[in-house]
Length: 344
Image (cartoon, rainbow, N blue to C red; front, top):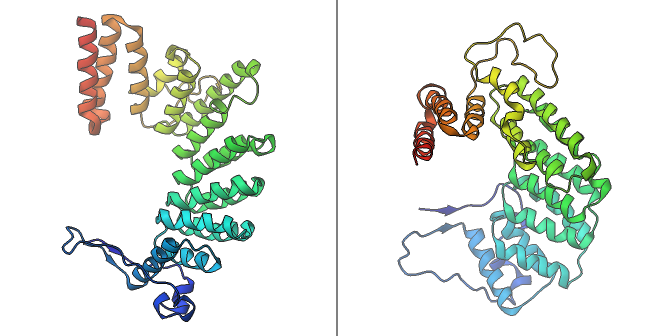
């Protein structure tokens, strides 16, 4: 049966004991949680959590907003950081008593690292920033958080929100350098690739519309070079696909680059060549790589006609039978759909 236990993070409750034993809380009538006599899946709350939430419901009923309410909500949040009502009431209390938000942000620095994967922590931080209007220090905080978990969705999402919400040139200035550094640490970091796409193509193309062609060429070169380092990296291949889709460019534009990665044998005469436009697979690369086969199949399918579908189907069959067996059913579906299209 589900059990809600205390967090390893220390709280005031660890030192002061249960709220029911504290004289300063004797004026509050705790309100127990309503539970059916025989619940289908009872939750075994810890005694500390049950005590704190009983008193929380008591103060919500009276509408109290005070310094001690901040203490109470902090206790609950440390025990259950996903307790949305505690977060919301804490935020309302902060505003009601005009509490110093810089102090609250320092507490959030600690809680965010302790509970990186909890959405409510990051949402609360967003609410605070909409009031403090001081986003600059946040970039350093986010960078530190990513050292704990470089792929955490909530951290990256918060960074994108910060950039888009404040839309300050100083905030955007070093973003590509930041992403470059993250990908240098781990070229397979899909979150970092997604963030690069956001910065370059989803933020209004900050270099200016007249520079779009130059930006596209730069990004194509960048992703090709990274693919040449780790040929089987699906994140980089998805980024290549995203560049073309976002800018309505034909996949045939990169066909010459893709083919060597989809080949079963390596042309060693090209591995030592310096070709920034179409860097070949490195010597000893494991070929063919599944993402390249998929990409080449899409190129052939987009050619249209029976010949294009035939060539694409042959590649999908190789994925289903040998190079990507885990998605065998999917590739067989692609073959059926494509053949049905040309038969109609």
